[in-house]
Image: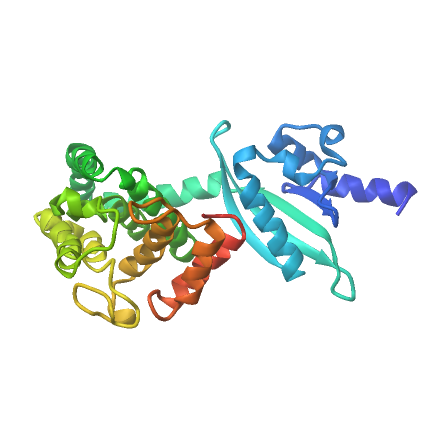
Length: 333
């Protein structure tokens, strides 16, 4: 396309409210419209011909590589992810589409960026309005806040003091579980409750003997019995906060298995609370990718394969499939 047609085409793309970026089969940026340049605060001349990997921070390199590989291997894959820009207090929805020719050969990638900040703010305003309709919901909100402020820091510090290997574990599990829930449920109160359950899921380990938590070798049978009390202990610690039933249920049943071979109640399939099924997946992945007294950490790819291999056995296949999709596209893990 040349001459006036090219000018018309470029003008049309530049006036779109969405950012448009084209990446060729060699992963080099060949076009970015005006909106995309504004979103990323760059000039077209600075990024054209650049490898798309160089346009991401170093800490994201492994995830970006995973996403590129996923698109190349899947051909015409299309997936959407939310990205927060804390500097500009904006939230963007990025849609990635693999481009193929008539024979299905990979040509490149189309990236569309849409500013969804106002949409999310409207959703939050709607949620706030619904809460305002009920004094009881407001009271629960205050209780949740007071619980977090008054007991969370103390309890987690006690736990981490007993077992240094758990440092940061609960926050990572909470973050992964929340991302999974957001992609399946959206921004609803249950998503926030699940995030809280993730932060508190191992709180029952305050009752586990330090020498058992930090034991470098295999546990004896009686030590396993002792360790497996922690979900029930966590339930007892939190049970006075009666309004947190979904959080408590997720914590009690986090170690149930989809095939019924878990604990403490040997629940099966959908009889396990959904929050617990999500936590089980996130908890297992983070445990495998963290150092423990008895073994070194798995690399992320190996841990993800374990999640996939145990779908329908240890893990809910629906949530395991979502985890793998988010992992393969570089969203979590």
